[in-house]
Image (tube, rainbow over all chains, first blue to last red; front, top):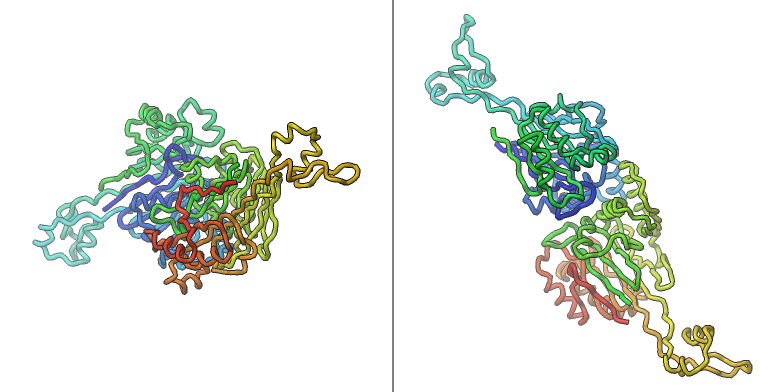
Length: 306
Length: 306
């Protein structure tokens, strides 16, 4: 089952050097999400064959233009393409106003239901939950209200050992118990079928934390601790630390330190400043702090194996 | 002196077949305008080397997304690029609301003054005038309030015949009179210097009419009569006439008839429906009605000679 993050845009502020504004496709099992939606995201989705009409939900981190200005166009195109399936839209207070006023003036009534979920952003909160996964906010430290998003698979069922299952006379109820890791007892309370005999361990639950835009801020560590993949903005090299602080952004060195302290699996760097045409020095700087750092370049897909 | 229209986007509704949403660069003498600004226009401006910070004014026809969704990003990028020069923005009622609410939620105060000019759209009106040109609205017939724009150079001064000027003893006041086509009289009221002897005819005043989006509507003919260049939307082939009527668009045949009846110099077709990957049948259809029809394909520059 897939757990893929595809970078659709990786540049901060204005598009430059062939890099587009922030957007990511997040595909977890059979669910398709979009995280942030800078101008031109619908074109990037077409470029990388991300199916618009399969989108289950869109998450917007904050209301700086490079993170949401492609949203209205994407919503319109899905409408024109005849989308009927409702769409969940998670984002800061104000997003509903911005979308609603544009629908009003264009005299458009969307063919599909748009469910706005406005986020207060003060503390990490559970904003989405279904059978497969949860999504929590990660309150970030930016110039305006800004949330990251933590995607986490739910604990999975243990796997039945096929041969044992065939040999024994197990009911569906028994199987379900064993899959959940509960021994099946007989009437006297003794173990009839033991989890350890009939099942293999469950596949692990994978996790992805998206953190853009933010000052380096260790208060998020308890939330993102141990995730498989961390996307952390890394707008500047560390020689621009003062500028990073001033604009509420992070340096590559800091992003590496964050990944190390949070003990994540891999770090994806992104939200690159226009001043860097060549990105290899940014990667090198992060790698000095955290070896498993990667550049979040457009089109790349980062997958987590089960 | 230049009089150039460059097509930056030519597709209707959603971007498709490598075609972008509507936008045009209009360069008249030393003035640079943008007409409509679909999503991704700032990228198209970069692609075709239209200088953002030289923009004097932006004209938005109407508030369907394919005509304005690139505006907020363009305004932001000019702000980030340090623009200081004020910018005039002409568009329908609602445009100021849409821009203002986005500036509010992103907590942005632009470095430059944005002068909103909201257009009522009921009748053709003079909305801009300076030494070189005038701009009038062209009220169009669309599903929501929509204006076309008529750009017209002002009458130009006649050209002095250099040799005559050198031979005679003409003052600056005399020269200015002659350039304006007024004979210089002596004290007895007799012609001292005749316009016909000292000047050549003025270069002609060029004109461009932009008409998108609209139903075929002959009420605009008196406004656009005899323009050098007419851009007229031509969303559909004529076999889709019912669909064109229903969606308040025009067929290629109708666009050709419009050009013929309005006795224009050349017709540029645009705002092509996604259903047409190949555009040559659209051109052929218009040409049957009006020979000097052209496809408004992206990147093309249409110039009018003096």
